[in-house]
Length: 110
Length: 112
Image 1 (cartoon, rainbow over the protein chains, first blue to last red):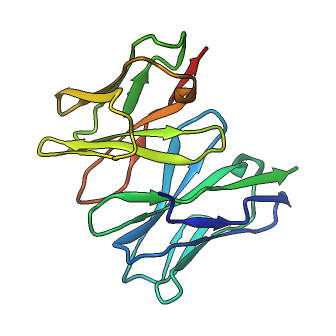
Image 2: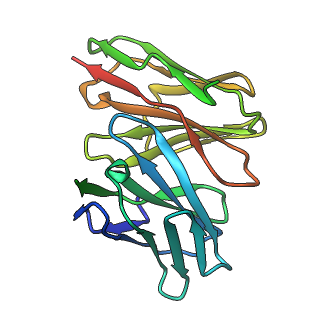
Image 3: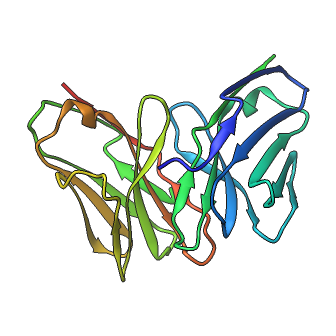
């Protein structure tokens, strides 16, 4: 079942702008992960944030986690054409199973 | 070297046939997975497997069966293929203690 709900479903911005994607979930989690999927390719892990963490950075990526609201956001700063992809959040519960969101399709216009 | 490799990348077959997709990981991970991604990009876990347990998503038809000859391989066998089986199938692996999944490039199955 899909626990995560991501919004927006699609996002189109100009190169250089920041892109923000959100993920909401329903049950308690061990961690939340973000993945990127380029067209026709496999998913690539971007960042993992644990339930006791509130914010994490990796290069141009910033992830926040609010467990009280059961939500997370992924911010990509200074977007590039190569950031065009679908972005998925996945939550890991106590049984180690990942439950996936439906994804946000991000298009960076040159 | 590719971390998670799966073959074939494309598979076109007729309804009713039996087919297999192979997956190998060279990361030394203890857990492997099969996922199905439909045309709307929804990801659905089919199986997760380590050397101790096989966890099957109960919604997966028993025409689908995973077979693991060793820790580094998890193959997917599909019997009596149906039109609705058309999708992209992803193999993935992880070290359960870290949680991060590594995916293969996918196998696009088309059933005619």
